[in-house]
Image (tube, rainbow, N blue to C red; front, side):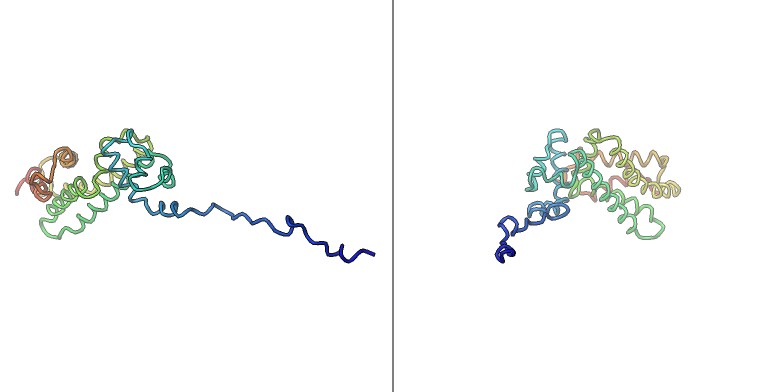
Length: 225
């Protein structure tokens, strides 16, 4: 006969306590990591500002992370590389500029001088993009474009095409009415080139406002009919 005490042999401590199950999927993020996930806009703004002031090559991801109070490796939660962050800065800026000028054209009142009003609003919106809040991406686009890969430059060129395309129907209407003498394509390139060059010399502290710049541009490029 088997002794009763052997039928109920107590389990050893190792077998009595089951090992904790490992959670499936990715490990939970720490509080700092969860906070980093909400910092993308600040990250882009800081990157744009530093790329503009220091240049792409002289700016490290550690510099960018420190500017927004993130851990040095946190930018890589959002971007594969510093070059990907540079491209994102330019894309974000171009998309914001496209949205701004789209609203400007749509808000122009209907009437016989609608094309004039649309051009005025396009010029004013362009000055807002160049000199308004969050304008760091424009100089970054101008001076750091060479730092992008070929595929990144291609993606940005499509956004630039969309931005410039909005000017064509307005200039065509002005050319048809006699307000614009130059060929439309050349006029678009010359106007945008002249306006964009203002990032080199415009200083709001010296008296001129963006409205005054807009008035001067309208007088320079168009003739009265």
